[in-house]
Length: 295
Image (cartoon, rainbow, N blue to C red; front, side, top):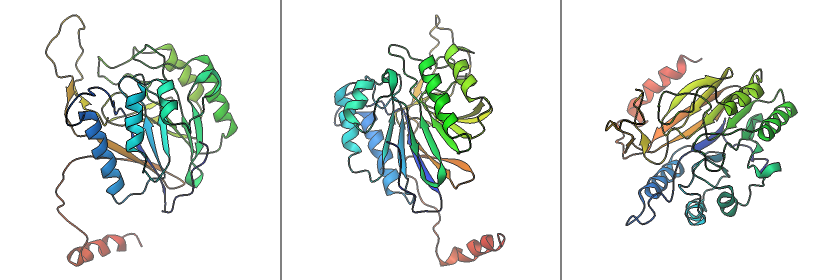
């Protein structure tokens, strides 16, 4: 996995889906909810007007890391006409991912991190933040050295980083890391001053988040699986307070657009939306007027 063919459009488009959690309830009938949500999200992406150059699955592809759930995921992706770029999350297993996506080659230490040369001169670096048995992220010295080497290879090449765990405290108390966890500080040290990095995009939190890390824009794409409730109040682990934790808000995917100079991220919630306007002759004067302002 090292190069993607040039985009046929005016910009490179990188689709991102995250936190699919296939296998959370495999015995649901007629089909597991998470698989149904993934099917709908993928169908919307494929039926829409946009044609991505690749699809990044930024971790928690499965809920238990088992081979059966990975196989179900890979089966749905079989006819996707662009490359699939899978990352491990804390619910995944490296062995399961490798079994379903043989295009991924383990690096030193068995980590599943790699580089892809995307269209229009964009370099994509995919990180492995999994530590078996741990819910939160990890970024050890081996991974730190690997990333430092990759950034040093191309200090002037625009770079986009994908990883599962966001290295920030977002305010969702029961999902957050502790402030200043060593793995986050290790990553910060590597990224500080790396002006070629256009953005970092993550998953894990099951909500849309926009912030920055080491002076770099950082975004979290909402999940395909049910979302985490937006409750930013502190939680007492010893006092169940009946707060909302998980909701049935619609699945969401992202499209990251790179035009050679600027990275812009778009997000679409998946649902049965009513179209209120189309580009027909009656609206042509309005569109022409908008274009006239650009001349």
